[in-house]
Length: 177
Ligand SMILES: [Fe+2]
Image 1 (spheres, rainbow, N blue to C red):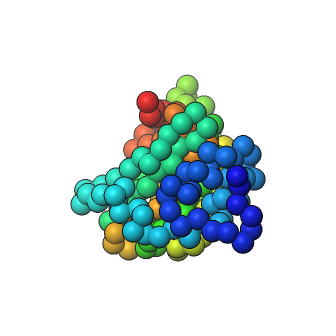
Image 2 (image 1 turned 90 degrees about the vertical axis):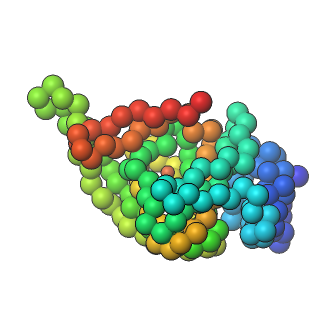
């Protein structure tokens, strides 16, 4: 049963239970705006690495994928899109800078390259939800504080998406099995 507006989700088990009942984008929105997760409930999913952020899958099924990303200060993602998935991100701990981009294909010289234009830059804090529902929007994330934690929901699960490679001004496909 989905929550009414006065309830809030404090544990991962409650969050998964609610997500399993959701059928629409609006319901995912409602759920992600209703939670006030106790950080202790996340402890078993968190792991940090000094070299790079870590992706820690909580659950994955045909409808959605829920994961925790742990960042040290200055860790950053590549510029990427989300393929056919919609994406919700919530900062659980710390501060995360998000830059958003639009890309324009450029097929000059028989070389498929893209032009990238930054269209926004935001700093996200705990309690704020960032969503990407437009498949044309690309973004990159960077941790501004040590031991940052973000929670990510993708629906459907992230299978195939694209990464911008600045060195060759082009994109490459990435796949998660
Ligand atoms: Fe992303």
